[in-house]
Image 1: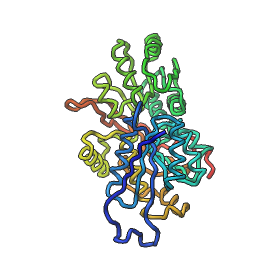
Image 2: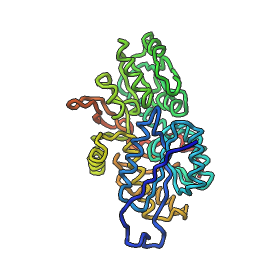
Image 3: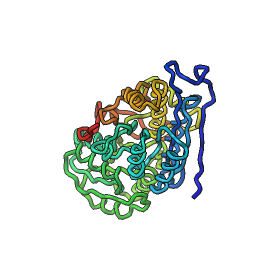
Image 4: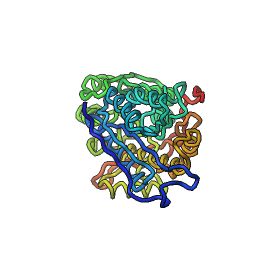
Length: 380
């Protein structure tokens, strides 16, 4: 099997000698495996582009990029090649939790750091945590638990909930139910990659629930919302940003207006780092950034801060540099909990129209200083 590979190396000198003052080489090789073709490619493209923007011009970071095609077997093959042949120091990039579960434990067992820019399965946040595994995005439950909390506090009495049947989808509905605590009218698991939602919409039509909560990332969310809009079924909708992010809204259009969704970031997040990121991303790529781009960008900034402070060959020192998280996150407040998953605010956004562009605006904080519930089981 042939794979296309992209190698990105920066092109400016650092400190004249390429070495830091304390004597370490000040360089890392990063292996990025992400989804660049097929279903969900937009998510991987945004993570890649955000990461490359954050590390642009940084000679300390060399990045090797491969396309996993959203297939676990290919992701495993690529990871083995990167570790054994490419000799990468750090791995990153995976979007989908089933691929993360196939790759991350193997990578850390081989002594490689894995820094996740997206997938955050609960199994890796609790008992399956590892000193070499960091998540810069969120643990999978976060957005959903915050959405459930908001729903409970804002008059929702009964919810129809739906997600794909894979680790992130299972975590999603678990998180929503934990935050909501109210009546669940129906709980539906769809197929991963499903495009026809006629049966689910029929069930929703017959439901007495006053609110629909769903997690359908990428093309799944686009297909569902277009079919729902044409069905005549009307329900209040609250969901995670994965189903209402910038790349998805462009395809859904006005059908999403008014939807409330939870996220750790929005393009209007009010801090200097985010203002610079949004402007730079638009200038570089000619489009608005998504949450995936923001996560890729923060992942690049985190790695740049760590390599500037410690030698990756000294794992204890490099791990401490990652834990310190000494970078200006685009989301504002950011730190790592003891299980090396984020502590951060989850905000509530609303889908609105700005001129001809359907986008999100921030309404307020849905869950302040959120930290996932699985960390209590992490023993490191």
